[in-house]
Length: 188
Length: 148
Image 1 (cartoon, chains in turn orange, purple):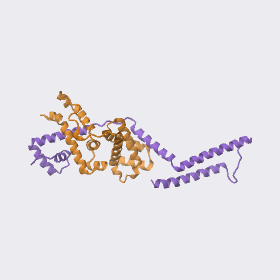
Image 2 (image 1 turned 135 degrees about the vertical axis):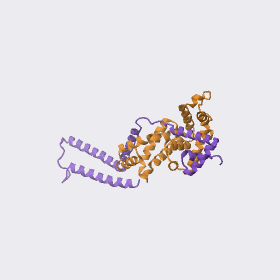
Image 3 (image 1 turned 90 degrees about the vertical axis):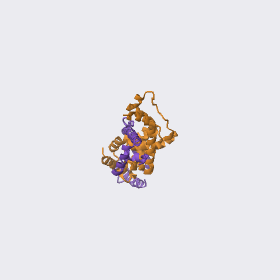
Image 4 (image 1 turned 45 degrees about the vertical axis):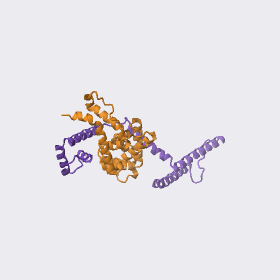
């Protein structure tokens, strides 16, 4: 599905409130929105609830969207704010990147096992899950959703330079923690 | 040339640099083992970050959202002030109708009178009421929509 087709779905919904247009649109973006909520909330049920709320807020505020080309930033921005609201209601403090544990479930006695790609990704998932809400959002939008730094800046209401600095910082921290695994793998 | 900064490494791995600048950094990488190692680590990390799979939503997610949207839209219609007037009018009509029937039954005149209002029928009155309500609904709802 191309963005143009999605824009047409949005226009159709605005014109006719068509349930089928809404259904198709949600189907196209449900994993993106849920993925972002999940990165922030870390609990599947809550993430799904936040994702549903995000879509409803999106459709109900569509008439305010000036430029339909920017619908994805608009949608992700709503999802980000909704997930953060849910997170604050839980009152669970986000952990700062610098205080992440040095190792998460790594089996140092068996480096071969750690080297296996699946386990390495699980380790990375573990580290990802412990990131603060903004850092997790930025990484999710940049690496998983393939959004540009400019679009991410619009989405999270931060400057482009701030987004870039935070991305670099998160990447640096993750690299430090993942280095032992990668070094083993990169050995000639 | 000094070692590459984290920002240079970021821009290089992300392909954000103009070809000339990227070429100069690549040249440095070729001759500096330390920067080369850092670069490879970033590449490996980014490959992994891009291959992280977010969990998928439960089946029926889109259907639930669509259903909720429709329910909310319906609820909004039923909560419009004019609809409340319509509901009140409906209840009042029902009470009147029951009253008429009871009156007719108590006087043993089960058949409804042919014409009650001079020059009109129950049918004409009913159509007129519906038309008035429909016009009032559009006028009031139209102005309310503008204020949203």
